[in-house]
Image: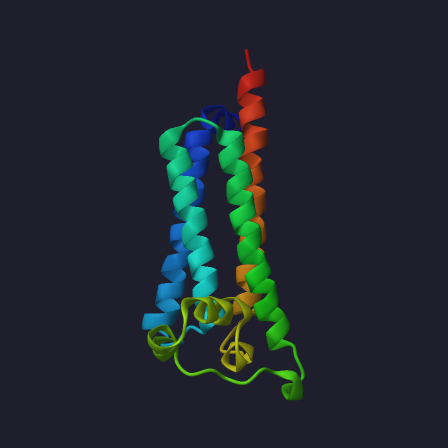
Length: 170
């Protein structure tokens, strides 16, 4: 274990984060195309946040400079995703009479609504976001996504710790 940590640098660290984000997106694609779970607006927003975090991790791995800035930006992107996931979890726990109305399909919204309204819809969610499609180990998919975002935040900030360990070694 100690030998593995000695070989670990921030480039590899960020690349592992990128692979983690790719895995999350791959699982989302599996749920959509194999399990046929249609994503709601908040699900799509969460996927976009995972994509943005993953792309930042990839850029950080390639760039190999300013790892502290990349770590803070990665943590910020992951926390934005965590906020979207938290809203999704909150919507799923609302009493039925407080759930917002369902919206028209996203394709219709993209074609017929102004961009600002579309973005608002994607970030605040609608009635279909409150539907629980699957539970694993007692938690819904948005709950697991919230946990994943919090782990990505910690992982991103871990690059700062790793960088300080590398600099302190003789």
